[in-house]
Image (cartoon, rainbow, N blue to C red):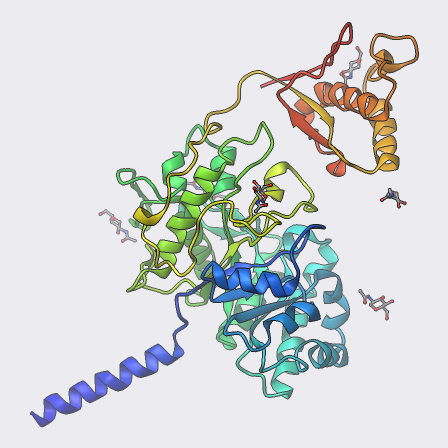
Length: 464
Ligand SMILES: *[C@@H]1O[C@H](CO)[C@@H](O)[C@H](O)[C@H]1NC(C)=O
Ligand SMILES: *[C@@H]1O[C@H](CO)[C@@H](O)[C@H](O)[C@H]1NC(C)=O
Ligand SMILES: *[C@@H]1O[C@H](CO)[C@@H](O)[C@H](O)[C@H]1NC(C)=O
Ligand SMILES: *[C@@H]1O[C@H](CO)[C@@H](O)[C@H](O)[C@H]1NC(C)=O
Ligand SMILES: *[C@@H]1O[C@H](CO)[C@@H](O)[C@H](O)[C@H]1NC(C)=O
Ligand SMILES: *[C@@H]1O[C@H](CO)[C@@H](O)[C@H](O)[C@H]1NC(C)=O
């Protein structure tokens, strides 16, 4: 009896110590602010709570947002924007003053728990800055320790393109230009400080690029039958997300750090996009996000084949559709909410709403590649002087790109900037899409399946 008692006491302590060191499986939200029509921080915080998020990640340390988070239970991740990394990496005083002005005024009333030093720096910033990441992380960590803020974890977010290979998952390998100079010291820092590798992982992109070979249901966690067994690890996969996460785990293992915990810093699926971006629709976005939330909040935790049963803490991307994000249409359509605060589709980040409680979704219409002609036209409501510059640029490229819009020619009338720019964009795109040109022009242009041709004027098109 006594032995049994001691044994169970022992297990009791073991359990307690594990659970206190273990992070909870709650799901958070990325609160991006690249929109000119978004609700106030106060309203946004209420919306974040209303969708069941327990954590929120912001891309800076915006004091208005931090003020709005004061006194809430939300665990908060803040960020030093990429352009500050170089200076902070060489100057401990600057790191200290960053903490003094951006953390101390809010802590502990705002539950700041995570501090990201840059956002996808290796994917989005010039090479010089890459070498600042780890030194800046160390200086930020020192500054936090000085103020006894030891429990704030320091990390940086990484996209999947830091890997040179990710398939099969056991073949996951960091790019050779960064593995030893940058990633290895980073992993050493994350391991020593018991922090996390903050991973941005979007099954949408590999599926989109290779939709002939990757099953959509496999990318959406909807397949019950498709299994892939990695021939080297013998681990069996039933969805693309697990494959992607495990490729990072195998890559870390190759550098000698098999145990650094993963934090899903961003994941999501676009609810809309351009005409040539298949699979971006409300049905798929709701399906992906509901399924990933179910997985991430499962009790007990499911983990991934390489780390079964382990918690994967996470932030879904993103709170809002953000109309000022550059790039193709999908970039501006990752939101769970429209800018007016209403839901794009019903969602519950707490994972407590069963699928049966959701209303039916609109059926997807663009899961198959669009086949037919498309054109590239001026987007609505854009800046006229910028549109004029883009028109001149497009006309200066290619062969006779803008001849038909010269005075007296068949496309001159109606003589308007939007009309001429639309012609020029279509003409430009029809010549250069094959060499990789996009119909974007810094947000001034958008692809369409509706033929803009009028009267004798025929717009050049691209055939998909
Ligand atoms: C970095 O420091 C240099 C030299 O002090 C300064 O000119 C520059 O504005 C700083 N950069 C940023 C982003 O603060
Ligand atoms: C593993 O990755 C390397 C590149 O790092 C690639 O050349 C090779 O084809 C991959 N192996 C398999 C089986 O795909
Ligand atoms: C995978 O299975 C094969 C065949 O059963 C075996 O030879 C190999 O050692 C296994 N590999 C691992 C990593 O378990
Ligand atoms: C919010 O915006 C969406 C998309 O523009 C629209 O469909 C919806 O009706 C709007 N909701 C309200 C309450 O205005
Ligand atoms: C249009 O863009 C130009 C150049 O970027 C800028 O100077 C101007 O203020 C903008 N106009 C409006 C109305 O936003
Ligand atoms: C322009 O015409 C030349 C000669 O016919 C051709 O070699 C070139 O590829 C054309 N450029 C484009 C963008 O179509």
